[in-house]
Image (cartoon, rainbow, N blue to C red; front, side, top):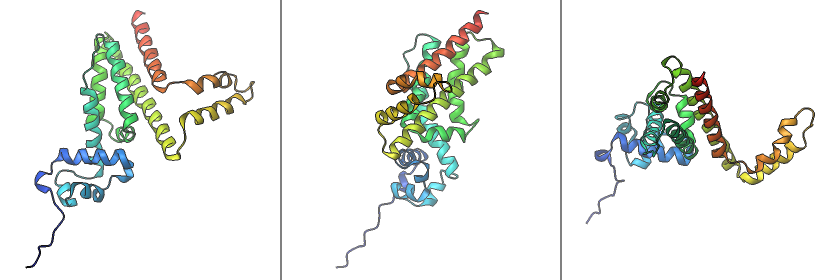
Length: 226
């Protein structure tokens, strides 16, 4: 009796755009953008590249779709916020934590200006800025300032954390080394940097991030009072 040759299980029948995106997110989280290839994705999905191309145009489309899925989850997360200010703080912190957990999201957003992932964030911030009573003619610069701060700081924090993981550096030891170096700078040329060297050792990135959001919110309130 001749045994049948077993072939790898193929799952085109259950393949969907959502499944492709979910597996892409897993690849991006584990291997970064370089690890996201149609070959690697095909292996995870037990299918051929052609089946994936039926749902996805190219890698750029795939990266944007994966980014949008993450942003959609973040923006739809329930927030117990009684005021627009609290909602903005919660939204900002949600984005900070999201980009920290998925470092590739920051760069993906910069490659998709004007597309749905960015629009979701823009709309979320914009609705709360309107609820704050900001005049129509100043809503755009206010939203832009918040958006730039949230994405810029979150992206830089994620990049720093990713670099530390790649080099195997311990955050505490790294900050101690930098603080020690700052303490030895010329006091006449770098008086401020020397003065905050001690604070660097114990600072909390999330707390610092929210302090910046609060500064912007206070600036909005101040501008409305004049």
